[in-house]
Each structure stands twice: as C-alpha cells, then as structure tokens.
Length: 242
Image (cartoon, rainbow, N blue to C red; front, side, top):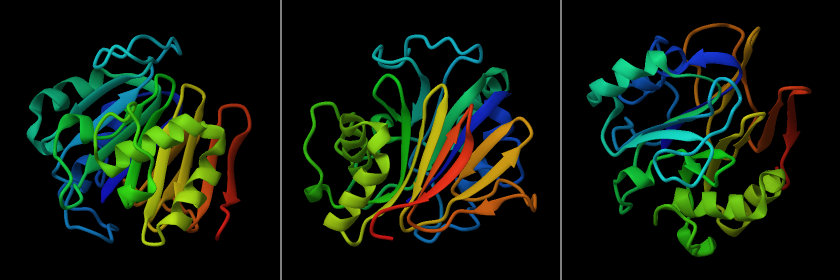
C-alpha cells in the first residue's frame, strides 16, 4: 500500500503540502493514521509537478515528458537533499506519494510513483494482480502500479473511471485508488481504500488521508471518481460496479 496526495490550484511549494503539515506525507511515511494495509511507507517516494508558470517543460529524469519528477527507492525521511530543496519548488499541479511495496515487488526508483506519459502524473495506492493487466513496453517498471499506469495512459484519462471498474471486475481483490494530475486537471478514484478532499481558497487537495485536523476535510465514498478542473471545480461520480 501507499499514501499519496494531489494538488490543483494556485502555485504552492512542495514542502507546504508534503513536509510542513503535521500529518503530511513525510509523517505518513512512518506513522500513517488511516492506512488499512501495512504499518509504514518506507520503500520509496516520489514527487511530480508542473512548472509554476504553467509552462510544461522536459522531464529531466527521463527526457520523455512535460512534468518534472523526483523519485527515490529509500524512505522520505532519509533524504536531506529533498528537505532542503522542496521549499523552493513551486507548482499549481503536484502529485506526490510514499510507497509500501507489495511483497515480491522490486524496490527501485522506477517503481515509485508518480508515473508519467508525458502529459499526466499518476500514483496508485493499492494492489492488483498483474495477471489481469496487459504487458506494456511503456510501463516504467514491472510492479503492478506501473502496469496499471501504462494501461490507464493507453486508454486515456477520460476513461479512467471505466478502466478502474473493468480492472476491479477482473480482480475482485484489487484496491485501486488512483490520483492523476495534469497542468489543468486532477482526477482520483476510490476503490478499496481511503481518500479525502480539502477545498481551500487557493485550490483543492486530494489525499489518502488528511494532512491536518482541519474540519473542512471531506471523505470520498468508496468506488467514486473525483474530478477537479480549474474552470468547473470539483465533482464526484459513482463508478460502475459500485
């Protein structure tokens, strides 16, 4: 399992979302409050974002996309360089995650979310039988989350809800909480695990669990699609099979 977070709104620092909150992803890496599977998330982490000015540029990590990423196979609390740089990284679209690897899955930077197709950044919190997912040369790793991301990218994010419902039907034991962000949209699904949203004056946070005790956090019902658009705001839609 993992914990993850997405942001869409005015440019903010990565540190303000991930490191500075009393129960942010840094704390969730060793002491999550609502995680149902696993005790901590020390098997890697990643942060992806688009430039604060809205200008999408080359992915410095892979050279294949518009989002910038920083990923690691170690625990977030052990990376002093990230803690030093994160306050200087600003964006209006951010996807971040800390990872608890499924038994038998490799622990390597390429297995840590967010994954990308060059336009979207995507994180998967859950587990799915790789036998129900097609093999893809575009997958960044052999882990289930990377294969799921490749399938979602291949089908297109407009079909995210249908794709999750189909994979969930093929593997009844799957947990398929996904967060995906582009420069102008933020999408998420609940399928077997927790998700909350926080509507702030400057944007919307979607997260596995609240990063503080603000009473404005709202729990998202299971098997729902969350859509956040800069123009139309936030909407919830029940997924097929719910």
